[in-house]
Image (cartoon, rainbow, N blue to C red; front, top):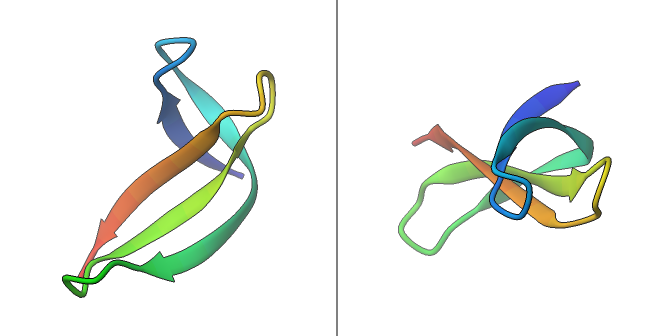
Length: 47
């Protein structure tokens, strides 16, 4: 599993069902949900 920072809990948490997305500026990121609270998480991976 991938870890990302949860701003709601202020801790690094496991990302549930991560998927790759591309922003308008061309950057790639992983998006998913926090396993414990359900908040949407993003982890920027690069170009």
